[in-house]
Image 1 (cartoon, rainbow, N blue to C red):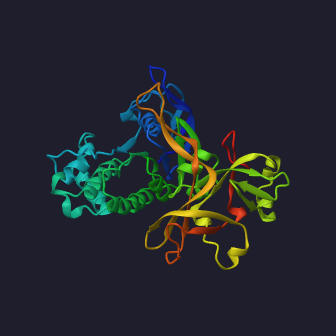
Image 2: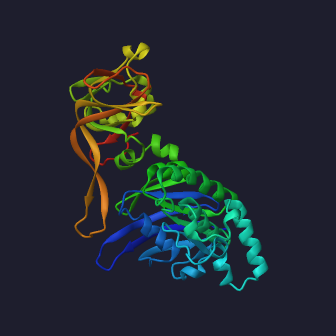
Image 3: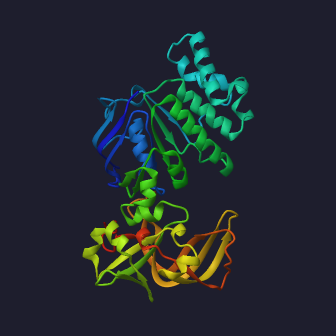
Length: 391
């Protein structure tokens, strides 16, 4: 078993495009690390450098105690699971799983035992004599994982392995992949563009944008303590409400469009760094679940008023879209002119719309003027210039 360490790893292509900029990332032995970000953010390039499929321009890559910058892919003791499974259609499931072992001059008896063990772990024993074309997408994905498992590698690399599955099967396979990884206990680097997949699977999640690591943290910290506006906007479904606002010079309230929201003393204790922003413009972030309808005791505290534009009925909850006269920050996808493949997300300012997550039986309909409770200690604050979190 081994760890993975990327130390200021950079990738610059011959045309001058920098796909990854000084990436520092450590994956502990046995840890499941997920890299997530929009298309073109550099996550797959980072994975391919670990795999030895892309040359490293600068920096150092270690697997275990060994620097592997110039070690060939086949000598890095890694196993990779691809998006397209890459199974041999003319071979049976058992032959596909054991194929790499046959190339290493392992005896037929040992190959059979290792294949049987992997098939039992993956629930594939009844299908060992079938061809890939006779399997479902989820079964084919498990075969691809079995082929990696039997090699007993030091490191697992997974490049969007669930993206070809339908939505229901992806949910099932998320749990399956994590169960298998915990059982074998190998350091795993997993790439996905799906932030829900990242949050539900990773021990830690590394969020990338424009080739730069934005934040690497436990999923709960990414959600509740984003380090900047990009992470705040990218992580979470629905996305965090982000609005321009101005803090009063005495710090007692927040001007959000035409509305004034009182700030509690508890909030100031939680975020002492906010004091130097009194009287200044900031960006505030509020999660949808932190904007309940102002009912009962909540009706007597600070509120935010908005006109209901749409209501999504999801059974267990309602998502209420409402308009406010404040400027909203949202991520927009843009393409860098220096590369046809590069895509990043940056905040832009547009007219105000918010979203609240409320109880499924709430009596709210399109056209209503709704009041949403605001708990100031749950508000996130960001520097309007640097876009970094305050406090």
